[in-house]
Length: 455
Ligand code: SF4
Picture 1: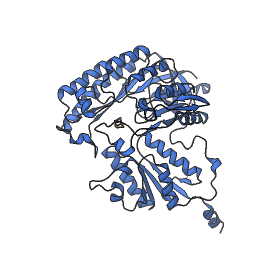
Picture 2: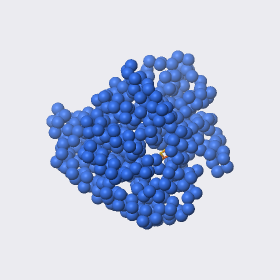
Picture 3: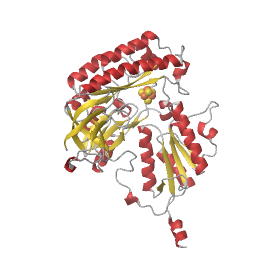
Picture 4: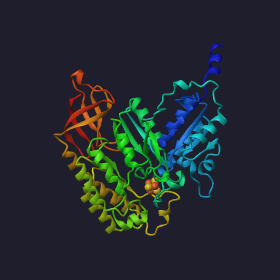
């Protein structure tokens, strides 16, 4: 009887599956925060939940398959499923919504960045509890990343129309969050113990262009909603700030001095994708007319410690051997620190699929391997130059044997690590989220090894 009374009182519970990129992760955090605010519980298993929300990714074919599998699994195990995220906005070949066509049992489908619609669907199928414990939700919401770092999403959507990408079709044009709101979130994250903020969007350097850099208020001061101003404001928080998805527009140069002054991390994640002007034109890439080698040189002059990360695509439709060799020469000259290389993979609905002269699979792959091999030699030399230096690192994981940390040059999940043996002296043993000084004594092309000098 007692058990029955308890279960009657149990708050409704929602299971959550979060797939996709850091931007999707931020959407998941918003939905989870709202669920908590309204008094729902988050269930750790399908079976223990009254309903499941699946946040999907629709970018490349393998991500689509992973999302469809997750939806199928949730329907099988639980039966009540709401789908959100990029794949939710996609249509199948006959022009009908892909999810409702393949999984007609799904209760509701929304696109990305749709907390309100998801909550409406949740309310319809699992009514709100009467007495939400609003006070139990922390100011900074619910975070899915470890507590010492967090993603800060500054805008949604994109004004560009790169021919290989369908994100603007799924997420719409750029919508920037006012700088006051972004800074309130950043300050609240810092207050909750976050030591590193990763600024994400589809196009970070375009921040504010959609609202004409409108002035907003940060702690009562008027500040423009603009990339450089954002970097300056975040730079005053006294924690690590890392910029992702920056395009090489001229105004980006003005943020590099803030890196040299130690206000924000000397790290730029710039997805160049290619170097040859004709390929960039076919890709319709933003800022493709910039003289990138000269820009890189100027950034390094202004901030010698800057780490440059980029991604490239091999075998884009029509890419000739000469165009690919142009890219190899660019990589050789640019001496970037971190490079991700992807063989071109057609995305359903992307304009690039209509371009002539597709590159055969084996050529795409062979070029990817050549580019990676070249970059590995460059990354190795750049890491070797760090041997003997003392770097400040942030601790991500610890156990009795050792410590996994990252330096300013390493973004979580995508870059390398710094591996450190656990010091014998208990006074030197750090905790997750601590900053420590480490002398580097070994490396490979991705990671560094060293020992703690100061904590
Ligand atoms: S900049 Fe290009 S690749 Fe990036 S989201 Fe916009 S359209 Fe897609």
